[in-house]
Image (cartoon, rainbow, N blue to C red):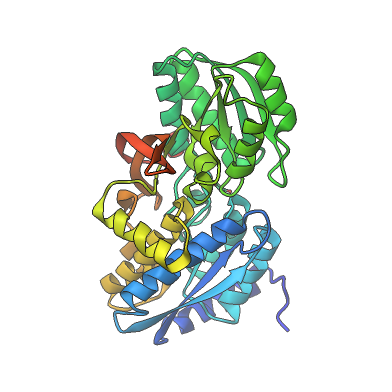
Amino acid sequence: MLKTFISGAVAAASLLALGAAASAQETVKIGLIVPMTGGQASTGQQINNAIKLYQQKNGDTVAGKKVEVILKDDAALPDNTKRLAQELIVNEKVNIIAGFGVTPAALAAAPLATQAKVPEIVMAAGTSIITERSPYITRTSFTLAQSSTIIGDWAAKNGIKKVATLTSDYAPGNDALAAFKEHFTAGGGSVVEEVKVPLANPDFAPFLQRMKDAKPDAIFVFVPAGQGGNFMKQYAERGLDKSGIKVIGPGDVMDDDLLNGMGDAALGAVTAHIYSAAHPSTLNKTFVADYRKAFGARPGFMAVGGWDGIHLVYEALKKTGGKADGDSLMAAMKGMKWESPRGPISIDPETRDIVQNVYIREVKKVDGELYNVEFATFEAVKDPGKTKK
Ligand code: PHB
């Protein structure tokens, strides 16, 4: 049986040799590692759905190669991610690893991507540093800094003076908080309270009760995909919607996957984000209709990260004429541009990170359903987290 821990030069050599062998195959294998169970399960389900939909619509063969997706559930636990990535690279000889529902999972796989020269396509996680951890990493999701800088500026310019923050206590929450604070305070706003909640099973009640008494103009919230529904339920139960304390933030808290179940307490929330199911392009209308038909649900931003991730693989294979070694694929992916259901996007050839529009949106009722309705667009936003270094 494969040892779950391989170290040093032996691992590097065997991973390299296997990587080379894999490139001669007729099948291109993608190891898709996502949480399908646990608190982040909705992320894995959305990504897996979107990839299935993409392959249904575009076929499973490109540039003469069959593209096979091998799904593994890591439950968003980085030890699992690392073990699964190793098994996929060594036993299954995958050409690509993809998915990564949370930042710690994406980081855990990074050294393996480097050693094996296997591209790691991050379809969900959003901390700025991820792409700097391996030259084989690229990203089709987003960074928290992309949206949080923009909502920070917007809040300061739109009459919001006092903000309390509530962020998930791990890397992307810290990125979101730092980016928001920098921009909001530079615009004259003040942060009157900062609360961090654990990633797993957070209880928002004590924070919300205090906020009801302190009455800031708004609360800035970052919780990862899957948790927004619970947050908004507690927000409504404590009557914060009635007391005029606005919800602002990156759009994760208003994930389309859950939004319509949040009830009218969500109306008026203003968030900056990269995807809305209400994005008015023809491509997105088709995407939303197809996804709904196939899965009986509305796609959220994680679905779009999966859709664009598999699209990137297909387009890279077209460009390499089916060559699927890591260096050829990485070279092909750098600088790639295409239209996503979210709008125009590209892969920055220098940083390998995604460049995309960020939209400011307000939750409104459209034909009886809640949607994030876009009202301002910031075009081709690079990750602001990179320029700091
Ligand atoms: C992350 O762990 O990087 C992450 C997860 C879910 C989000 C955003 C960021 O919605």
